[in-house]
Image (cartoon, rainbow over all chains, first blue to last red; front, side, top):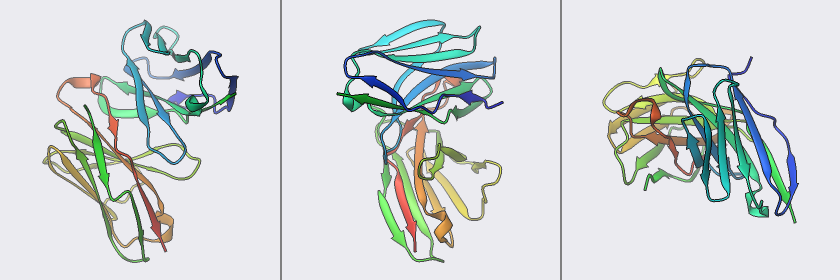
Amino acid sequence: QKEVEQNSGPLSVPEGAIASLNCTYSDRGSQSFFWYRQYSGKSPELIMFIYSNGDKEDGRFTAQLNKASQYVSLLIRDSQPSDSATYLCAVNTATSDKLIFGTGTRLQVFP
Amino acid sequence: GAVVSQHPSWVICKSGTSVKIECRSLDFQATTMFWYRQFPKQSLMLMATSNEGSKATYEQGVEKDKFLINHASLTLSTLTVTSAHPEDSSFYICSASASGRGWTDTQYFGPGTRLTVL
């Protein structure tokens, strides 16, 4: 079982819609969770991090964490074509500084 | 804040030569830096974790004698690809975190270095 799993996509949504990106992780001891965006040919860019169960909102982005279900998601409201990228879920643990990355979900927002 | 730079952004070299890539944290002190490699259409692969003033910790399967890492200061880590071969051609990305605050540290990525070995 992969440590961090994401659907590779592509996830296609129309402009203005809500994009929902999901991620599951296997280590129940995981403490912190990150979402990065990576445009083609570029390096990852931090969008949000979340540590506590529940929702965390930042502009058009909302991260949701459910530790009991080992599930973290990212909602993008009012999706724009410029949001088209690969979204990487990453999980840290209490025993390491390393990030465990999922393989990413490719999001396509069409006009 | 939390800006990480890399130099060079791209490099082309001949097979058998060595290439050095620099990673700098510009506005914070990074006691831990990470080096990743990413092949086209593949996910990030962690190569090594670098702590200031100590030897790097390499991931399984990464040759430490081929990929030399030096983390000489709190703002600079270097990766040297020695005796590069075409199969080393890849996108090399560093990240930095301000360790010392435990597991809540966030990694900030540099812009990456694209290496092409002819």
